[in-house]
Length: 395
Figure (tube, rainbow, N blue to C red):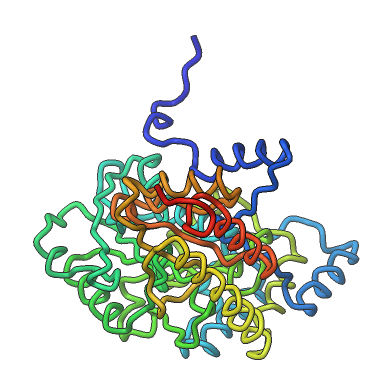
């Protein structure tokens, strides 16, 4: 009998992969589910970005293999982006590595820094891929708690009491997903000091800094951060390019060389048209970001807050990013009990917080990646459902 590799027993099919099959079946049955679950921007990139892609795609000489390190034009644009928005200096030839999305970067960085059996600090709640890829690669996941009472920031007193002797990497993610907690320079400064003290590499995953947020911070702004920190960023959220798969890894030249050694043995460079178009997107005017990343999501956020209110969920009015995170009322035993009721009684798909870790078990997450009219319709469906006093009973 042929058996799968033992590592498959360490992970399950990704929640959204599994759940979207059910939603697709409901839609096939004519139930017309509105999805407020996944953070996939529904707006296009800037016109200049698309025009550049089309122009390069028309060039018969632009379709060959590209170097894994990325085109000089893209690396220079990424370096310029960080100088312009974060005032961080990066050598485009040695300190910038384009990625096929940040998820790929999680794989490459873990392979480059962590031996099987060594430990990785992962936030709870946090992006599930930090956990699943660590397990697949034979690393031991050690969770550290993020809690609402501490504004979803790391508790450094608790971290200092842990046995950190086998820890090689620490994953952090600010502005935070799923909670929307803002990046704080004080937290970044503490993370850099913590990394240096314990000889740990801190990786900050930073794709949400432009969404409903005018205070854009990077851990690389902290003096000395490049010695011990890596930052990921992505064009998926900030530039409306999730399907293009363009991310970036930013670090000191030695770290980048180690990661490139892994990456070059796994994949090749993306299509030249995508790279040059992404470089053009990096030069978007502030006005474009204001409209796409602030005004559009602010309008949707107001409707999401009404949904939370009608469900009697509590949320932070100062959170940022493309999701709204809310604490469920005591009458529900689990968050999934509530999200399943919303799905089957109101035909609206909302994410249960448990998928991000045990500290998310009393929370739900609403995505802002749906048009205003769809979000408004979702609100009306929930109002009319048995979930609310207007629609029936909450029993």
